[in-house]
Each structure stands twice: as structure tokens, then as C-alpha cells.
Image 1: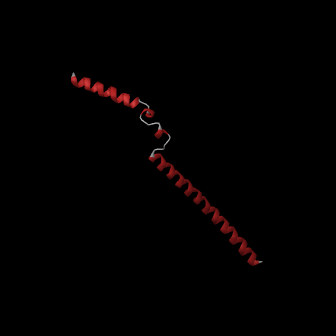
Image 2: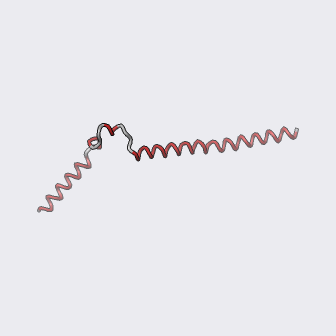
Image 3: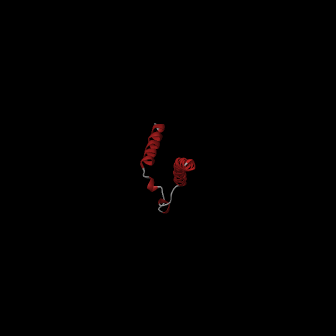
Length: 78
């Protein structure tokens, strides 16, 4: 009977903590600050976006160099 009471009390406590909103745990000052993991994820996204931009430059550069070489070789033939 004593074990059952303890288990019910633990279940009620765990359910209460699970259902409590996160804002009750956070201080008002830290509500505007970003979590370090979120900051790290944002930095990772920015790095990935810049890599994608640089990767888009390479095909454009290859096409530009190819066109320039075609133009140069055609001018030399004339």
C-alpha cells in the first residue's frame, strides 16, 4: 500500500512537471536571450548558406570562362 502511494505521488509530480509550461522555469531576463544551442545552430545555418552561395558561383565562373575562351579562340581564327 505504501509503494502504491509513492508511485501515485511520483506519477502526479512527473505529470505536473511535464505539463508545466517552460516559461515558468525561465527568468524574465533570460527570456530574450538565445540558448547557446540555438545560437550554435544559427551559426551553422549561416555557414551552410554561405557555402551554398559559393557553390553557386563555381558553375557561373565555369560558364563565363568557357564563353570567354570560345570568344578568344574565334577572334584569333578570323
